[in-house]
Every structure is written in structure tokens, then in C-alpha cells.
Length: 131
Image (tube, rainbow, N blue to C red):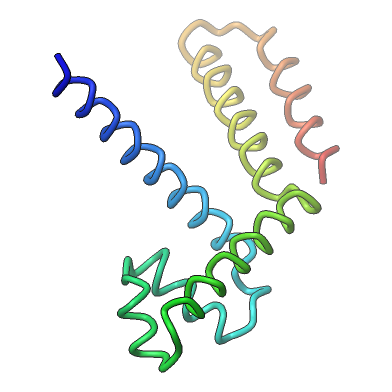
């Protein structure tokens, strides 16, 4: 029983870490170009190339703590960009609406329900209004 709880806690920690890496990778995809070259290189090595702090420190000839500080600072910057610009949120909303349009289009093809065209039109206007 105790070993099951320990395994479950470990699974939760791993899952949270993976979720965090995915989120940081997405933030980097959208806003990474706004980082300084040196920051971008270190951040890529840590998030995308999965190098350890020690490995990056060795390559960059800086302390492990220096690498850690840069990664934390970059993460905060990327999160702040998203809070201000909300590009990822808009991107995800647009993807959701496009999926709705695809479902409606499939329904029109299969059942000939032309009333769905009005819904497609409404969704497409919502997408355009966001930009």
C-alpha cells in the first residue's frame, strides 16, 4: 500500500515536470526570438536539448548557479510576454474554433445540413474579429 502511494506521488511529480517543460517549450516557440542570443542558447540547451545545468555551465564557461538564474529569468520573461500579448491563448482559441468548423463541415458533407453553414460563418467571423 505504501509503495503504491510512493509510486503515485512519483508519477505525479514526473507528470507535473513534463507539463512544465511542454509549457515552457510552447512559450519559447512563441516568444524565444525576443530573448538575447546568449539567453536563447542556454534556454534551448536546457528546455529543448535536455542538457543538465552542469553540462550547460561547462559549455558556457559559467557557474551552474549562473545557468539556473538565466533559465529562471528567461522563464519569467516568457511568461510575462504571454500575460501581456496572449498569443498562445489566441492560438489555442483559434485552433478550437477551426476544429469546430471542421466538425460542422463534415456534418454538412454527410447529412447535407445547410444550417451548419450559418454556424461556420459565425465562427469564422469570431476568428477574424480576434485579429
